[in-house]
Image (cartoon, rainbow, N blue to C red; front, side):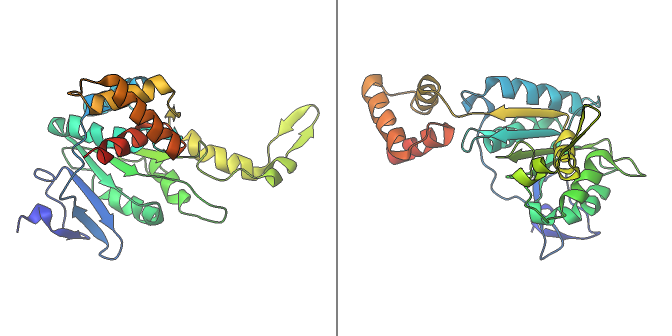
Length: 261
């Protein structure tokens, strides 16, 4: 078996010449190469052109060895956050971009994962999908150390790209606001608010994603059906499908496409 396609235990290393993406598996305490990547292409994404441009520019700076930001893609479900990350890898893998997916529950292992990447001749994006933390969870502390370092700076060839439905990654509670106080006309946020906002602040590039209006939704549908002649009938069926789902976004367009056989 190709060594790049085997699960890699701690200390064995990954053959990044042949492997472009891997996932951390906690029960094996190591990386496993991703065998079947989502083939979604950059040009297939519709309605998020502004976010595409910003993330592409940041990634191109990163690949060129220039300063670049960690990125947080936040917003409504199904609007293309995860698809944009997948398409990014497909677009830039040939230029030396590599990606490691780490589940939120495995972030405690993040410093160890990153430590093995210092001297690799590639640029790595650590990808955390659907990232958020509930009250009492502490995994974000390991993430903070990788985002900004501690006594030792994080490696220059690693960035974190995360997606989330929450802008601040942590729940915002009314009790936090009640704990805020005012002294001599200055507002002092409660420590819990500071803790929650400070995590998101470590992502220098933050991009919001929002539900589609009808025109954008139909543009996404059209991109999936380039050969259909009767656009009016297609649009009627797509609108009816979205109405039944109760939401218009890229995911709904894709699901509509799959129902058409």
